[in-house]
Every structure is written in structure tokens, then in C-alpha cells.
Image 1: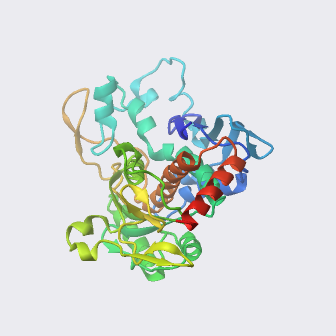
Image 2 (image 1 turned 90 degrees about the horizontal axis):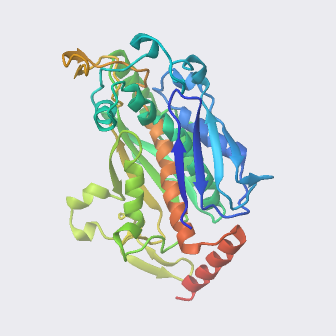
Image 3 (image 1 turned 90 degrees about the vertical axis):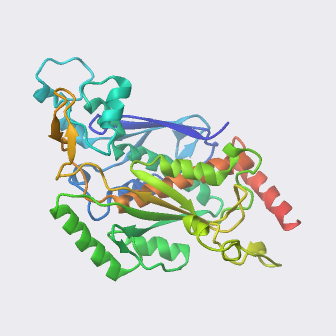
Length: 389
């Protein structure tokens, strides 16, 4: 069975819920580590007041016993602490009251799902759209990805992320061992590897916020230790790089994705793009460079997987853009919901877990089994096949 999950819940509802199906039995879950990953998503310079209210923690209500998965669907919930301020507004029961009491939204925000969702689902209260389209939903996507991350770690696969750019400011690119990259970026308020750039980005975010605006950026995810042969060239929907791209594009506010050098490959010669193949007794087959980001033909080639995504500025602005009131059809300034000036550092964490999920899913498809013991045996057999090739 393929690894998959579904999420449910609204940004101001009582909780967010996820159900994961397809996890093998006997995977040890480190709850403290999982909740640490949720905490990482809440950090980052430029976040709004909501992150001061929520203290995200995953509570498991199915599929885990005595710290280990059972092979049954895993169910988890993350409580919304802000729910206590929204109980009447978000109540599932019918309520009497004015639009103001219901906090009905009728002025859609440019760049958000408000108007499209209202038109599609025939909602005259756009809160029915914005509550679900909010990036708050990424909380449980990170929780699911954190489980995938722990699964990958069992096979020596590590995941890291960093911020490459926020608005006009680009961080100098520094190569370093993945463990060092994880430590350095975790200590940075904006998840960069350069202290001087961090200060510049903080000042820049402050300026953007003071102007009532928002700013986006570019983030990168690196997955190291991935074996050769995840994904396949034989069908479009089995190409792992394509599936990773879809996953990254599904993150709220992401508008672009590239693997390796990505779009730069369209500006330089083939001799400057393709990675030469080498062989040694110690490493076996490997590449001289990693411009293609760990992929050839939709399959991993044993080099680190490198993915970049671009996040647009958050559409909720304290200096609202012009919109149209759906009641009167008259021009109006868009309605303001509480938001962040910059969520790029948090988006970096979300992307790590989205990519980890897709890699874990492909790993299970390749080495599938119902228990961790069976998967380990399958993986060991494949490693022996590679060594003898």
C-alpha cells in the first residue's frame, strides 16, 4: 500500500487532524523530536502574534502503541489554543447573530483563495474559504513529514534546509557538512548560514513590516544519503523529482520549484550542466558534481537531493490592496486578517518535511514491506546488488 495522509481542520477551529496510512509496523516514534520539528515551524523572524499563542504539540490517538507503530493508520491531532477566542464564530452549530458577530468576510484579499473559493463553493461568507486555505494547515503536514523524517533516519538519510533569499537580500552560498548546516541554520533567526546576512535580513523584514507590506523569498532543502534508484523513468507519475515538485508547489504561497541548478540550466551549455560519472572502490559509481540535484531520468542517482522553492509574499497586508466587496460590487480595500510580515524561515521548515515525505514514500515503494524488519532486509539485499554491479 502506498504511503499517504489526509488532513482536516481550520485555522481557528478546535484542532488540526491528520491520518497517515501505509506506515510499517515497529517504527519507533520519538515524540520529543517530532514536537521539536513542530516548534521549528513556529520560529523565524517576521512571524506574527499567532505564534505567541500556539504551542504546537502532536497528540497521537491511533496507530501507535508503547512508542511503536502497529501498521494500522496513525491518527494525530494538534490543538489550536486560539480556538477559545473563536468558539462562537467557528461553532459547528447554527447561531443567530449579525454578520459582525459572525465576523463574516465579504471583502476578498488579492492573492488569497478567498474569491476563487467563494465562487467555486458558492460561499457568501469567505471565512469558509480562508479558514481552510490558511497556512496553519502546514502544522500537521510538518507532523506527518516529521514521522517520515524519522523513518528515513533509520536508513541513514538526513534532511536539512536553509533560506537562500528574502526579498532583495541573498545569502552567500556556503558548502558545509549536513550536520553542521542543520546546527548553523537552527541557530539563525532567518535560517541562513551567514551572521552578517542574518542581521541585514532582520532589518529588512522590520522595514517591510513598518511599511505595512510583506515579503517572500527562496528556500532550499537538501536530502543526503538517498540511495540510487528511488522513483522511475517508466511513467510520468513515478518520476520522483516530479512528485517532489508537486509536493513543494502544494505548500501555501509557493509559486516555483527547481531541482539542482534548475532554471540556470536553460542559460548555459550542456558541458556546464551534466554531472560526469566516476567510479572508485570506496564510493562505487558517483558524480563529479551535483548540478542536477541528485536526479537523472526521474530517479535518484545517489548524490544529495537538492530542491529549491520560491515563496511569494503573504497576501494579507496591513496596507491593503484594492478589492471588490462581494455584497455591493463596489471597490474597497481588502479585509485584513492577522498575518506575518515574512514567513520564509518557517516555509523552509515546511518544505523540508514535504520533501522528506515524498522521499519516504518513494523509499517504501522501492523497499516496501509491512514491518521495519522486512524493509531493512529488502534494503540490505538491494545494497548488496549495487555493490556487485
